Image (cartoon, rainbow, N blue to C red):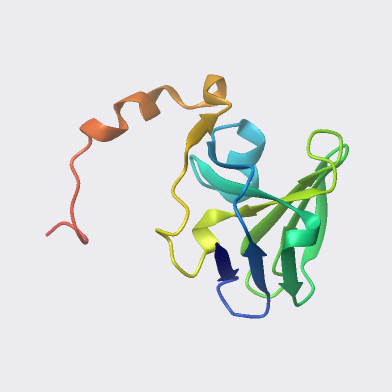
Length: 131
């Protein structure tokens, strides 16, 4: 499997080869605060199976946790935690060129999910903005 993605402005591109160790939706508070989203999709690959073009800006969000994003448009792209995932990188699956290429297979850190997330499927849904 070859996967490609990029930031919003196109300054940073990436390509990943093979299958990820996981494709997960994370509910942790740190991911929510870092992205401004209620849940974040990640796919984990060994460093040697992902190629990054461009230079992301790095931020150590907690000891040993490096989050990388585009310094131009602000798109969150990569998550690195050598203590938990040595020599591996998680990329944000929402940045994939094909958003259906890698559906999540697990949800993690659900203990941190907002209580309303359990009712997510019950919310009214509209194909575009409601009229």
